[in-house]
Amino acid sequence: AGLPAAAAAGALSTRLPATLLTIAFAILAGLAAWRMLAPDRTTVTAAAGSGVQAPGRDRPAGTGPGRVAVTGAGLGALTGLLGVGGGFLAVPALVSALGFPMADAVGTSLLVISANSLAALAPRLGSTGSLNWAVVVPFTAAAIACAWYGKRLADKLSGRTLQTAFAVALAAVAALMLLTALL
Image (cartoon, rainbow, N blue to C red; front, top):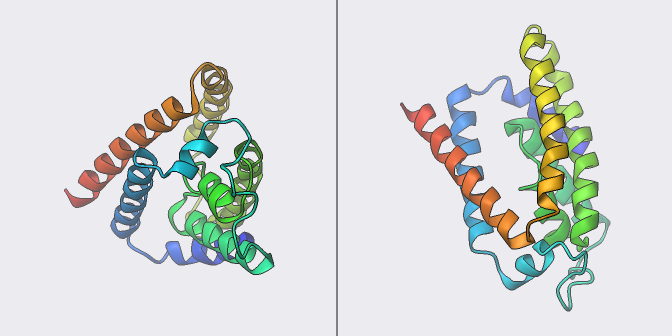
């Protein structure tokens, strides 16, 4: 359900002002950071990384094909429009809306994000000119290397510590993006 929404939103984003997209991204990132800094009991339990969900959270009420499709389409649309959908959106959606255990949500989110990103990229290829491979290749290589080191570091920290650190970093990025867009 996310792929058509990602492609459509990706095409739409090429027609919207960059400043509007930056502001929307900053607001969404700020809201996600705020939500992570003040989580409810279910989020803290799921974020602890135990792979076990909070009591009574085997599957949220009403989880069925319709809810899965709406959640997937929403994630796809945000990925296509704003270039987001990573851990701060996909993982909470999979845990909270669809009842995935945290460990399954993390792995599943990587596949969902990759597929949605490729679907969102396709309509942009014709309208953005060429990709700057001098930026794409080193950025991708650094991201892959840092993901490996990040995983090793994450294994040594508690889920709550990781969640707080990520939320603070996300809030800082949101603030900087908002300032940049408004100035």
